[in-house]
Structure formats: C-alpha cells, structure tokens
Image (cartoon, rainbow, N blue to C red; front, side, top):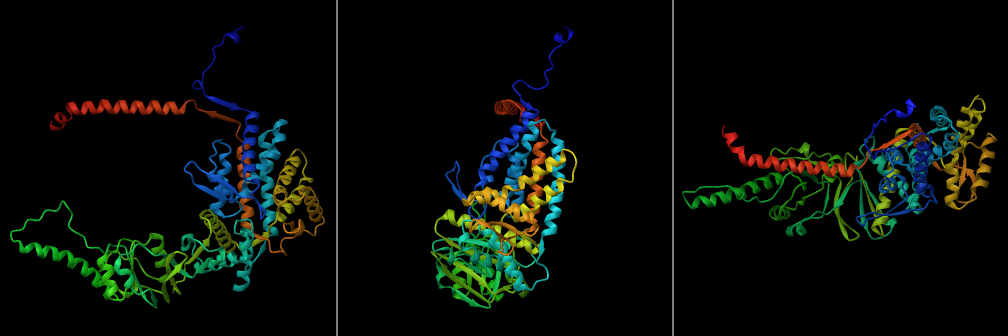
Amino acid sequence: MAAMLQPQIILLKEGTDTSQGKAQVVSNINACTAVADAVRTTLGPRGMDKLIHDDKGNTTISNDGATIMKLLDIVHPAAKILVDIAKSQDSEVGDGTTTVVLLAGEFLKEAKPFIEDGVHSQNLIRSYRIASYLAIDKIKELAVSIEGKSLEEKKTLLAKCAATTLSSKLIGGEKEFFASMVVDAVMAIGSDDRLNLIGIKKVPGGNMRDSFLVNGVAFKKTFSYAGFEQQPKKFLNPKILLLNIELELKSEKENAEIRLSDPLQYQSIVDAEWNIIYNKLDKCVQSGAKIVLSRLAIGDLATQYFADRDIFCAGRVMEEDLQRVAAATGGTVQTSVNNIIDEVLGSCKVFEERQVGNERFNIFSGCPSGQTATIVLRGGADQFIEEAERSLHDAIMIVRRALKNSTVVAGGGAIDMEISRYLRQHARAIAGKSQLFINSYAKALEVIPRQLCDNAGFDATDILNKLRQKHASGQGANYGVDINTGGIADSFANFVWEPAVVKINAMNAATEAACLILSVDETVKNPKSESAQGEAAANAMAGRGRGAAFRGRGGRGMRRR
C-alpha cells in the first residue's frame, strides 16, 4: 500500500522521448543496416551508380560511398556514425568508403540475433575488438611489400593499384589510360604531401581520351582587356613575375578633399596618379620578367603597356593556381614591385596559350622544381566530368598511400575470405561464448565477396562455396571473385591489388563504429526544441526592444554624466 502511494518522480521535461534497453539497440542496428543497404549496390567494378537530386535542383551521379553518404540527409543519430566513418575513410585513405559502411552494417547485422537472445553488448564488443586485432595482424602478415623496386617497376605496381580503384568507377572503361596519368601526376609532386599541388581542370566536350596531363601548371585564361591579343602567346625559357597587387589606375577616393590655390596644381595631382602606375609598370619591365601574373586585377593601361613591350600578363589568377605556379617555377609571390631581384622570379622551359575545347589555357611546362602537375579532364556531360574528378581523387589518394605505406594485398574479396577463414579457425580454439561472436565477425567479412557477386549478377552462394573450399585448402590465400568470368581467380596474379592500409583502416573504422552503436542502450530526445528556439528568439527580440526604448530615453544623458 505504501509503495502505491509513493509520488512519481519527474526527471525529464514533459514530452521527452526516451527509448532504452534491448529494443533501442535493435532499433539502432536496423537503422544502420538500412543505411548500408543504400550503398550496397555501388560496390565493385559492376556496382551501380546513384543519382541524387537535392533541394537546390543539383543532380549528382556517383558510386563513391563517401559522396553518397554526404549527400543523403540522414537524420537518425546512430546511422550518422556510418556517415562519419565513410568521411574519415575518404580523408584518411581515399578509397574503400563503401567497404567500410558495408562492413559496419554487416557486423551489426550479425550481432542482432545475439542481442535479441539477451547477450550483453559488452561481451560482443570485447569479442569484436579481439577479432579486429587478429584480422589486422593477419592483413599485415599477408601484405606484399613493393619497397626496393626500381622506379619503372614501382610505377607499374602503382598503376595496378590505381587501376583497381578506377575499375569500380564511371571511368572504369579507360582505367589503364587514367591509372598511368595518376601515377605520373603523383610522382611529379614527389615527397610533398599537399594534394592541392595536383590540379584537376574540367573542360566539357570531347571524349575521355582527350584528357591530358601537364607536367607543370595549366589554368584557364583569365579575364583580359583589349591589349591582350597583341601580347605574345608563347615563350621559351621566360622569367615569371608573380604579384599580389593591383596594376590599375586608381582615381582618388570620392571622400578625399584637396584644396588648391592655383588651378595649375590640379594637373600635377592628375600626373602624380599616372606616375604611380607607370612607375610600378616600369619596375615590372626592368625586372626582366616576360610573364607577369597577379592575383588581383591588371587594368587595360597595364595590359597595353606590357603588350607594347612583348610581355604576357594575366590578372585575377586564382590563389591556388598562383601558389602552384610558384611551387613549380621556383618563384615567390611579391606584394610590392620595389626591389625585385632575380631570386624571386620563376622560370620554365615553355610557356604557351593553347586552345582546349572551347576554352583557352595558359600552360607552363618543363618547370625546374617540377613539384606540381595538372590533369585536364575532358568529357561529355558536366555530371560525368564531376564524377570523373571524384574518381581521380580516389586514385590519387590510393597511389600516394601506396607510395608511403608500400605494402599491397589482393583485392576482389580475397583478403576478406582469407581473414574470415583464419578467424573461424582461431575461434575453434576459444572456449565459451566468444567462439560464437568471433565466428559471426568472420561471417560478416564475407559480405564483400558476396556483394561483388550480387552486383555482377553471379550466383553468390556457388562462388562463395568455391572460395571457402579454395581458401580452406591452404593454397588459395590470394583467390577472390573473378568479375570477368563469374568464377574464382588468383587476384594477385590478375593484378587486382589495393594498399594494405585501405583494408586496415576500413577494418578498424567499421569495428569501432559497430562497437560504438552496440554500446548505446538509451536515446533521449528533447521535446519541442524548435518551439523552444522560437520562444528564445521572441524573448531576445522583446529584450532588444525594451533596451532600445531605454537607450532612447536616457542614453545620452547617462553618457554626458
């Protein structure tokens, strides 16, 4: 009776939505599985593309996991974790974004029946972590190093890695063409880590094969004045002056006030303005530079002045292009034309202005520093070129990673099947429930080869059985799905390679995400946050009104005191 009369304790605001316990964990798992299903069909060389149309009317066609995850407006708080791991995989490694989402979704799917049967989440998390450590150690053991090879051999190996990445993209049909281009671009920037030293310029029109690589810098012709056409458009071994100042005739500001006692003095003021600009232009000419680039405007007077002296100039050059010209030519961007010495001038073997499609490009090639490259992309539709740019970004990231961490593993689901076999074998030696959990982790890894088969229209059950048999024999560690024949093949011999760091990062991120989602057992959603924001805004407005009235009445009097 006493228990019945106890008052109810109200802890949270009325209308707060709380869900907790086993049902909450299962609900989160279902949400993550739904997100994984959205990108499932994009995996592999036969993966489908997604067309995403946003509220602003922009259309994006992509099969890059990270791009799709960013564009999907996911509101479920647990499912957002999968978006974050796709983004981190993209920024860290560049490729494997679909893989990481699929793995995390599959780990959770395998954990779901255990949660429903009443197994505590922490037991699952502990086993998953152990399994991930074992898997990563196995990947490192199976990885093959490309260190110590000659430059030509290394280029060939890196091109294979780039081709594997590009095979699943929209430009997969020309993967050899683009793979060698990407390797040359990454080799050109050497050990420098800055990705912005590789420029990608998009020119609609033509076909993919019309794309080309410039070992130097290329950028679109900037806005120019009348005298521009009289300037020379090609130089051999020119000196290049890079500026961050305006070369324009500046009239006095409207609010400037000058008092004159003699009308003749007015002319001297006008002359002074002209003298300032001519003085700047003279100093540019005296520096010996044949090409003058500025981030700010170069006016019509300066354009004509340079044209009369056979000097090429371009104003309003984009910041990143100017920085890449500086890196390539060895020049330094100047903020003043005073004291220009030879050390701050850049140089290149050939400068020319060339027509590409319906655009004109300024191209600097044969640069001494050589620490930059530009890929000029051609293609039909704008969406196609955009997707080609994203694909090349992935390939560039992969080649950079393979150069840094010079170990590769077999792709095509081979490494996943081998780790799955290894974990199943290891699980048999473990007593207790952990055996079941590590087995479920091993089963989840099979999602990659299974999905590759499904997306290519093959019989997944049949191919997976063949793969299991081959890997169990101890002779087929490198055997994966053969997309071309619908059977199994030695991925390593077929040059389906990917950097070991892609798999290690994907395994780590997917396990962490799965463990994080399994460890959440309660979600609290605060009520009416929108109306609360509205009230806060209304109160703020009311307060501002009162304050304003008060200032109007007594503000001045108070200040005077």
